Amino acid sequence: MEDVLKLYIRNEKNQPRGVVVAVKVGDQMCYGFSLLNTRLDKWDRVKGTAIAMARAAAASYKLPVVPEREKMVVDGFNKLQDRALKYFKDMPPENIRIDLTVDEEDEW
Image 1 (tube, rainbow, N blue to C red):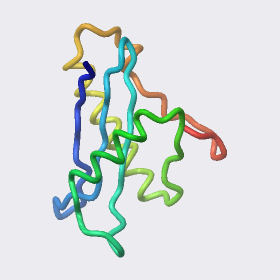
Image 2 (cartoon, rainbow, N blue to C red):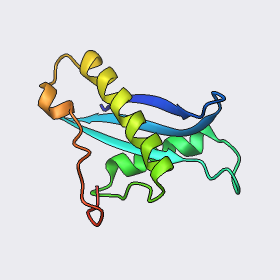
Image 3 (cartoon, rainbow, N blue to C red):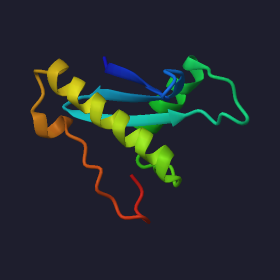
């Protein structure tokens, strides 16, 4: 059984623009995200969650290249990490913490 925490990424008008998830798999925490392309897509929480879950299960993925979009994801991950540290008391904190220091060419 996997435990999942989900948080919606919202813009300044409080409109949903993406999803970040933290998935407990055994004794590790995996993080994933999805962001809405506001020019081409309509908000769909089910599809967004599915994309974020798929990224959490992937071996690696890239963060958005656009700095504003990357900041949205990183901020979401930080908020979700804080929630996960409080929620998953049975896990060591070092297994929950997310390291967001990656080189530009590295995959996440």
